[in-house]
Length: 461
Image (cartoon, rainbow, N blue to C red; front, side, top):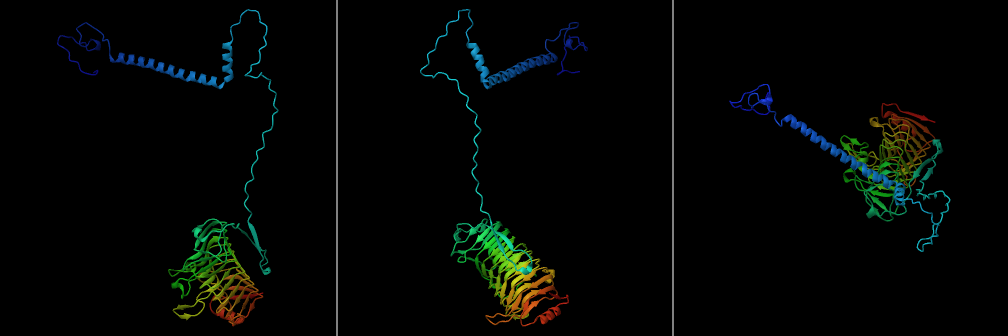
């Protein structure tokens, strides 16, 4: 066994290989070493233990005595009592002196016994009344009694008291605004919920080409009394219109531009005047739309274009002179070219009532080609005049009803309408309509039935 290092013995020393303490000492002489590693380790441990004990006593004392002083500070009564006891002089067996009357101090008033103040209830906190916003107005519109339903009601946002000048108009409107009279406004986007746009017929919103004067996104928007004038893109002026979002790689429908594009649910547009552009008001994939008492005239395509619009109301609008000419592979057509006063594709359960249309390609047009049928819509008390093609056209659909509608000539110009209706491949219900066009009802039914192998059925009530 080796301990740290080798030791070289001298020849005159005798080694005891069993006793380490005698290594290197003369024979039979044993002398223990004063220090070795074991003793050194034990001494070090004892020293470290003493140091640890001292540190422990120090930290305990530092923790206990400041804590006692803090307790004394928290209990001023206890501290004052101790001081008072220390200040008392030792008792002496002397005669008790007479009590002397202490004169009142001129600087300190005599001590009085405080009277008990009655406890009062805490004061009532007065909460200022919060500002309550003005309640929304509710408008109610009577519908034809033939619909057998109640009035059409909807809410109107509060109109701002101050108008927003054209030069301060934001690109994105996120709160209700009022247009200033006599100013020209650039196109803008309305985005949000419960927002109102209140126009003035003397102010004009202008759009160009495939743009729109107003684009509405969100829900429960309200647009009233706006005046919009648009233009038609030059390349779209003399073409056969595409009714759908896509026609063999070319965009159609809402892509042509116009007055207002609606992509907001439950939006109401009323009392507005919109003309120019391809579409007056275009709506795509919305429900709860209300178009009320608008003038949607003189567009180059459609006064009202609707794609996949459900459960909506079109009441009291005019769709006049929405017509166009076009050049096609089959030749030149002076009118029509897929234009209409009111157009709806893939539309369900809408009410179209008390509208007026004159001299549009078709007045009311629902094209059901391509499995895009429009079913269960109700046409009540509408009037169409002088349509060069069809006053009421609905194809490849079921459940549509026509009650107390009129199809006739235009007494102002003498222009006649051609077909009062065209219902090829559809099942429709007629009741108390007035058909006064060039083609009488019997011929109209026969021609529509012969146009397709899909069964055509007209039910008169």
